[in-house]
Length: 143
Image (cartoon, rainbow, N blue to C red; front, top):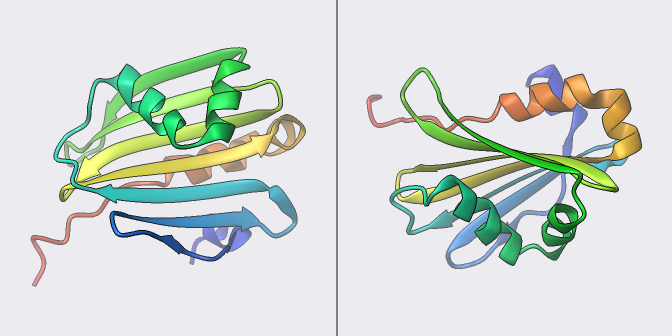
């Protein structure tokens, strides 16, 4: 287990027929959280602007954060294996979020790291490192 993973403890797993979600939080600062969800039936990413809007439709907290945000940025990146990720940063009035979204193996994966602004100011480097550690892994080439 990495140092970053050991900072965050799991909360109960949420599962529906088409998706699975896991939430982790910093046991010393429960308001700092990491959330991962995946949804089945996605072969490719929609345009970068549409993805964040669609994620916000299912999360009222994210909608509120975006609508009150001082700044929302988006970017596209590729990892060493050519996997495309959309990266979003939402600097809201009360909280700061880093969001990565990608499609792999007919699933859409969305990874969120969120902290209230006071904690963000203190722990930004660790939270960014945690966010940057997210990636999908292709097991198809292994026996």
